[in-house]
Structure formats: structure tokens, C-alpha cells
Length: 192
Image (cartoon, rainbow, N blue to C red):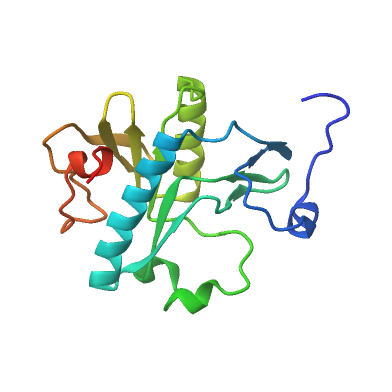
């Protein structure tokens, strides 16, 4: 962080104009990663639609795609923007999508976050994101590797982060958050 960097507080953040830009706030500093690749966006769309379809069919909650700010802590303000997130009606207190009206940032833990890995994601960055999600009480995290065409599913508790499994081509993703979900890894990476 340079000496000229302005440290944002929650009031500064909430006063910012609405944007479709993807950025996170880390220790009060606005961080704007490079734009995702088109393939990243394709995978994001496929996951978003598949999860939303499942959630709507079973009336479980709300699925959203980036950019959605998830508040980690303040001060200094820290946010994350997972590629996809799921908020259950059961744990959130939300009753329907109307519950989202007027909310600028999510101040509760999503039940599930999905991070689609990119070439700019270092082990340190991924570890930091997982630690942030663990801190706020996210129950499950999916790490999606476009390069390896795998989905790593992690169970997150306050004590530890535990691998449920790494799922690849021809395998069905196993999720504790969505035990009835039927989603093949191929459905995420292949065009149809």
C-alpha cells in the first residue's frame, strides 16, 4: 500500500457510486483484479444457472453472481466478491428476493461461495480468501479450476477447512450444502 492510498471506511464505501466493476477491499484498500477471461465468465454463467435452477426448484434461497460485496470485517473495511454465492432462506432470515431490496453489501455469511481460479490467483491469495470466508461463517467453498477442469469442494467450520473431495471429468459434484444436487463437472466446462 502506498503512502498516497486512501483507506476506505464503511461510510466511504457506501457513498461510492454503484458499479459493475469487480473489486475487493482488503484492509481498507480498493483492489481491482484483472478482468476475468471469457472462459472464466462462461464457467461462471454455467455454475450460476445450474445452482440457481436447483435452488429455485427446491425454494431454498438465493443465488447471486459477482459483483456482490461480502463484508468480512470493519474497520478497516474488508470485502470479498466470490464468483457465485448462495444464501439459504433457513440461515439468512431472508424470505424471498424482495429481502435484497436496498442492501448494498452482504453483511451475513453466504452458505456457499464459489471461486473460479485464474492465473493471477496465488496460493497465498486463495488461502487468504478461505480464511476470510471461514472467519464470517461460510459453510462450504468450491474452488473451480478451469485449467484442471476440476471442482474442489471444501467444508468450512470455525475450527478447520476440510476437503470433501476434488471432482473431475465424468464425476458428480458432492456438496453438503446441496445434498440433492445432481451436477456433473462436465456440465460446467463443456459447451452444449
